[in-house]
Image (cartoon, rainbow, N blue to C red; front, top):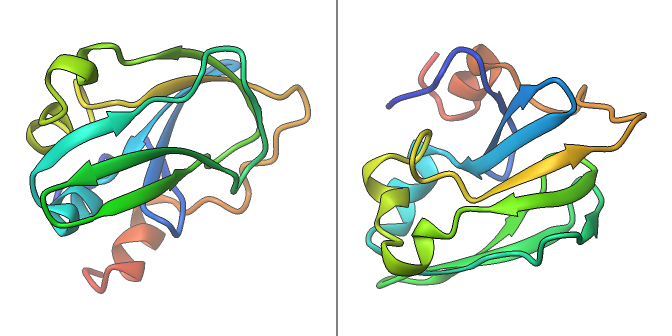
Length: 127
């Protein structure tokens, strides 16, 4: 199982990679594996204010549809338009080209509820 060492993780299997006040968000390798073949991604609207833990979009696979929750509070800055034509990027590169949206983090953002890579591995039973 691929768990990048510079990401933070929500218990609901979303990842966050922070770069200053901008964060890229996607679903983890574990989550895409559980979903199987992703066939559609309902991307969030740019400019949407979201709170940590809020449902922000939906990923549909041949098996099921899953709500995706924001791991942090902020404003949706951009979305991965490539997923409109190739949603399988979430399966083939979940921590890279399969990112879902970028979030302009709230000024007082608190990321302490997110797990480190080690904590996330423990959550998955891979410690």
